[in-house]
Length: 536
Image (cartoon, rainbow, N blue to C red; front, side, top):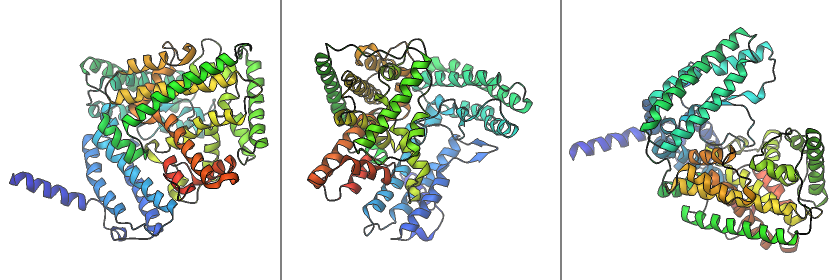
């Protein structure tokens, strides 16, 4: 007992001494001091890097977790009682990030449990402020490069690939988790990296330094895959975080005002509402011809460009939001190219009416504001860690689908309303997979099958890539799968509160303009800022 007490006392002393002495250790009522702490915190949050390789070893992670207590203590020293609601919310945002790191160390431990954490190559641009899910520091965004590469670009890419062999070697010592689904489906993510490197090798054969870096990365990735596959038969444990941890994560990191059980009920309700809404639309539209998918590259370019024009004109003419000149190019640059053959779920929707998913493409407008009209506060000017932004980004983009439908976007094409309900059903079904996987009630494969079977028209095929890719992401990042629908419901609450406060003076345009100005933070916090005095 005495030894245990001495150990506890020593641990408490270490925690108190963890953060360096600073004036901000004292009680402060200065918002500027919070901004200073935030800058220091962000530097601390990153792993230490040696020769380009981030250190995720057990010793390094244990040391970082020990020091975290001091940073939390410093944050709690602030007296924000006289600050604006937005500034008080900024304190909550910094606390949520610290809680996110704490959760990573206590529960999620992606560096020890998830092989996908160490796959650092990406060949497609994310539509989010930061990539979804946890991943190692030092990602290489291949989509940014245009081949053949100039000498400076080739050197930059070679430098980005250089740490891969050492990182994957370190990963073999770090990965001690027993979660079977995280391990098995993580192997598939690493195999995607191998395929990217194989494609890259053919593009850089004439650039010796870069070609050599690609070859080393290929060999290291191949060796890593073999090691993962050798270990796979021994992995038999659950991969979910459990309901109690999920509740904690919702409340303290995602800043979402629901529990796991409440989200389960909401997702089941939204799934039923989506199927019912679809049935009514299909009955009403029975005499109308079906929507015909895009069938050629020429038709794709014509219809998708026309969709951007139609959507922006609708936003302007119906006074939905204050448009910017750059929004046209932001949306038009992401219409993609025609893909023949079997269609994935979102392509099934997109090819039938390209206008429908232009509503969800609000992501690119969000990113445009982030880059072109950054927030005045440093805490909101950048990107929140741990995907804390997702109820705002994914939730509002999802809300725009149904909001624009009710605003009259599909008056000329009634059958397109069916697509909106199909989208909602798919998002509710996959969210239920997220919740049940983390409760360790179902495996990833069972969650994928449930999502497929509960998405209308068989468009979320088990033979496709989308269904398992999504469930794997949600297993890595708790609450991401639910953020689309939960965020939408929070948007509904925000609009309802503003409408009740303003009465005849209400306008959707003012709500959306205020959202754009306030930054990419959780909707529940935004509701406090944009509807002060309302019941929250």
